[in-house]
Structure formats: C-alpha cells, structure tokens
Amino acid sequence: MNMDINLHSFGLAGLFYLTLQICVTAHILLKKDDVKSAIGWIGLVWLAPILGSVIYILFGINRIRRRALSLRNKGPDIFTLTGKSPKEIEQQIPAPFLQLIRLGYKVHPQRFALGNTARLLENGDEAYPEMCKLIAGAQKEVLLQSYIFDNDNAGRLFLPALTQAVKNGAKVKIIVDGVGINYSKPTIASALKKLEGVEFSVFLPSKKPVSLPFLNLRNHRKMLIVDGQKAVFGGMNIAAGNLVLQRPKDPIQDVTFLVEGPVVDQMSRVFEEDWIFSGKKHFIPASFRAKGHTGGKIPARIIPDGPDSDFGKIEMMALGALSCAQKSVKIVTPYFLPEGNILTALELAAMRGADVEIILPSKSNIFGMDYAMRANFARLLKKGVKIYRSKPPFDHSKILLVDGAWLFFGSANWDVRSFKLNFECNLECVDKDLAVQVGKIIDRKKTGSHSEKLEDYLHPPFWRHIMDNAFRLLTPYY
Image 1 (cartoon, rainbow, N blue to C red):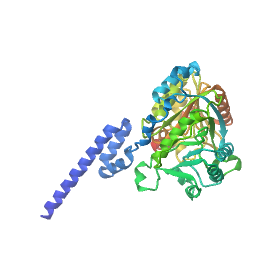
Image 2: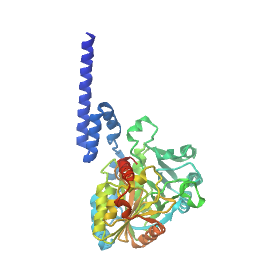
Image 3: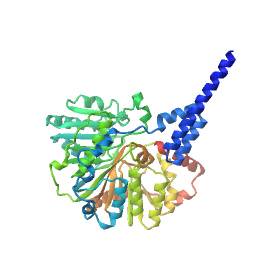
C-alpha cells in the first residue's frame, strides 16, 4: 500500500517537473530573441530540472513594465519640444550627418531640441563644485539621480547645497540605485532622510526580497537638473574617488557635461518616469520653456534605454554611427565587452578606411575585466582598429566621437550590461566646437598611453589564451 502511494507521489512529482520544464521552455522560446541566450537557458532548465527553472523564473524573465511610460502620450509632446518640423531641424544639422540623424529617428523617434549649450567638466574636482553651486541656487526644483552616491567627503559636499535649495523653496527629489547606494557604509540614505524637505527614493532596493528578480537590472543613469534650465549630465558618479586632486586611495578620472537648453526638458521626462517607477507620486517637472532661448546653437536629444521597453536603442545608435562614419571613430569607455555585432561594425569601419580608436584604462577596477576585454583585441587589431590603454588613474569616461562633430555621451558603457540590462541614458548632439573640446581631452588621454600591438596577440601563451576566453564567457555579468 505504502509502495503504491510512493509510486503515485513519484509519478505526480515527475509530471509536475515535466510540466514545469515544458512551460518554462515555451516561455523562453516565445520571449528570448537572442538565440545564444535562449539555448543557454533551455540547456540550464533541462540539465538542472528544478534549479534551472527556478533560476530562470527569478532572473531570466523581464518583469519591468513601467506605467510611467504611458506619460509619454500625455502632457506636452516630447517629440515636438522645439516646435520645429523635422525638415526645419535638419536644416541645422551638417549635411554629412543627415543619414545618421534619420537613422536615429527610426531607433528613437524623438526630435532634436535646438539652441542648446554644453560645456565639458573634468573629474569631480570641476563637476562637484559646479553641481553644488547649481543646487544651492535652485529656486523651483532639484532633480538628482545617480547610480552611486557615496556617504563620503564627496557625497557630503552636496548636503549643505541641498539644504539651501530647500530653504530657497525648491522641491528636491533624489533617486539612487538600490545596488549603487551600498558602495559606502553607512549609506547616504540616512543623511538624506534627515534633510527636511528632501524627497529620496531608492530604485529597486537590492535588500528587499521582492526586488530579488530585478537584482541584475540596475539604474545606471546620472543626471542633475535644476529649475528645468540647466543640467549636469554624463556618466560620473558621486564618490570621493572622483576628487582626483585630493589624491584619494583609488582615484577615478571622468568627464561630465554642463548642459543648458530645451534638451533639459527631455532629461526631466526621463527622471519623471524613474521617479514614478520607484514608487513615488507623479509630478510635473519645471520646464525650460518657461525661460526661453539660451542663444545656444547645439542640436541635441536624449536617448533613454533599458529593459522596460524597446531596449537596445543605445547599442543600435552605436552601430548606426559606426556604419555611417567616414573619417574617424573615437571611443572612450572604461569597460569594453560588446557582442559580435559591435565588434564586426568596428572592423568594417576600419576596413573602409575610417581611423578607429578605442581608449581603455590600462588596468580595470573589476576583477577579470582585463582578461575578458583582451580576448577580443586580436580580431580588432587584425582589421586595423587601434587600441590604447590609458595610464592611471582609472578612467571612467564614456564618449563616442564620430567624424569630428557627432557626439554620443552619457551613462552607457560599451558592454552587454549597458546595452541589454541596465537603465541607461545618453545624449546625442552635433557640434564641431564641442567636438574640438572633447577631441582635445581624448588626445590627452592617448598621450603616454600604451598602444596595443598585433604581434603581441598573434601567438599568446596557452594559459593566457585560456584565461582570456574563460573570463569572456562572463561577459553579460560584469
């Protein structure tokens, strides 16, 4: 009798396991567009019947569906902030870049905002005082978002400025990522919560069980928007390492940009969506249009990206830029682990005769990253792509400059995490004067850097070849 019950229970359990695996496999086939990813998940599900299904259910399913995205169809139309038609906008774009601009509209149908200004800020030594000055002078609104906001001598610089903004009557809203906030202990959260009048939100808190399925999806965006008029936008976190002149233990080079003009409205809309997603109430951001024209001449637009909508927009823009480049491509990134499509586009650009340069740090701040990046060097060097390893301190800058005029900068690295998993945000603009400033910074980074040579990669030691390719398998998880 007991044996019959056990056999019956075993049969039901087996049926349950089989049904679970079939259902999970069906979900993978329907939802995973990438063939390699789908094969990997299916293999895990069937080779580890229960564990594989549980891991997929927790980490493999994209559950991000943001109600904030519906706001794009309400209120002022973000696609027509300039009040100009596409034809009028194109008249202010240099002719050689029109093809790339038109491609960009297909990737993300948001028109360029005209009449902007932008100024480059180097390291926290330049950026943080400028940011604190803007915050302390705010009269209406401060919107601050960062992946890392450390509770150190850099993070604490902002507290008096935030207090002053509240005294001025400004509404202050701050978003910090749920993983990034834990880079310092104790976190900045307790200090911010003590500031009366400051609203603070953690994006997908990593320590809450309900957030476990989203642990791999981080908000990597960095922006400061003041009174809807000026913004500091780029890829720079708030951490003591960025105060290079103060000689921190682990110094970090970085650049960000002070931006003014109607494109700030587009940044505000991205912040608004993140604010609502993080559980806060809807609000109407202060608008640049209340002030009017700055006299700037830069056409610019914001391209947000993330796992919540049609992701891959930043990666597609990078591919488009590489395919349209005629003379030069200059890439500065701290992490370089793209998939094969980007690598092929870089090779083709170099083979067409474009001068393709990639500037990477001489030593990464992430274990194994140098090995993984090195695995792709040989194929690029063979096709004429130039790779430079900049001297310390570690360089966290993220810039793409094409043909000496088209610029693409923001929070996204050149890796699978930024292109596929993270919430990112980049700015696209066309301006030769700004490009000259940026080009000088890039040339300075190349000065004294180590130029990778093809002969060093033709016959690498066996152990190094194995090590590099083994770490490259971890590409999506760095």
